[in-house]
Length: 251
Figure (cartoon, rainbow, N blue to C red):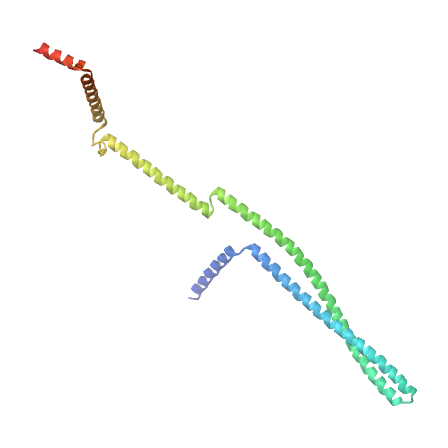
């Protein structure tokens, strides 16, 4: 049972892969990859901006600590000049605390600066990589489009495309029907000529009978025409004179 299910699963996966491969357009895939790389570059740049902002904030804090440290230094000198050693000691103690904070900020600043440099280098490399990919992408898209157009043209000329295949099949069917109709017409003509079939239009008569009847009909027309001429001219038609002379000789 397990082997059957595995085979069924393999069949479905193979058919799915085939369908996906047929539906996949490399140009769309390339554009999607380029878009994802652009999104990654934007994230790196945002990270770089955040690091630079943090570094700038630390620099401002360090400036403030330096200003406070100088102020406490001056206060300590003034207190000592007035004989207030206790105040001078307190001012110097506070100044020492500020200097420690400043040292910590300097360490953080150095770390942020190093991170900023790394992100800057990574951003520049990624930008160059994306530009190279974009150039390659456009080249591949143009090549694929040209190949696709050439393939369609070749298929149209060779008649193996789906559209041309349908047209070719239609032409073949029309030629077959035309040949069948011509063969049927020829066969019917042969049957009528041989007398196997009656020609309903000519009354079922053969060619010889129709030709004799045509000659007879022509003779009748000529006789009627001669009679009409004699009646119009008042003379006896030659044919009638010959017939009368023949009758008299017999008598």
